Image (cartoon, rainbow, N blue to C red):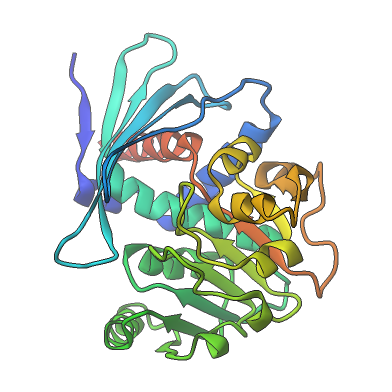
Length: 318
């Protein structure tokens, strides 16, 4: 048996943003439409700052199944940041054979941003023209590239806890993309954007509800397990809260769980899954002045859809 293996450079060459956005959009709609229960991710804390994760599942709209297996270890050279290493394994649902293996870090980098682009397209106001990125790592870059596919922004602001690094990041990416990207050292000013993405490793809120204007859309991405939070209770309570997966948020949505523990919200604060919005079953944005919030925990159906797209793109090139 020959197993096709896609290392990081090959993943980035084959997994283009428009194609990944379309694949993730279809995967999330099929996920919410399916009656098959997908298992929750399993995260083992090996020690402080060292996590091992397993995300098994199946493709609800295709005969494939598989898993993402990753380690998330803190990077001593860059305090507050972590390295994701691992693989996405896609099995053929008919034969049971391994179809392909893809670098998990590269897949996660692109498919996470693609999911936020799907949510932004579905939930942000039609007249949204400004974007703020809280963070200046790999996810910050992929989010700028992905969201620019679904919306045309007149201004893109980047805030980071290290202003020098944020400024260098903004300058580099503006030069590479031609997009109107600039650093914004004041988080209160950045928070006035029409669309905000939080993609940090923060353990305490870096975005407060009192800073955010009515009508804003927020993609809440950085925290993927209980504990770290990027926004405060006020923002969670004020938002129309859309999940990638209800079960996942109730198990691991840190900001949601903290607000629930404070008895400020209940489980019914989750208005919908993004797939239900895409299917037209539940409304996303209800009014122009509503704050919408998409909680991205990431789901294996996104990884499997991305891996299948990569494998198909490779086949077309042969």
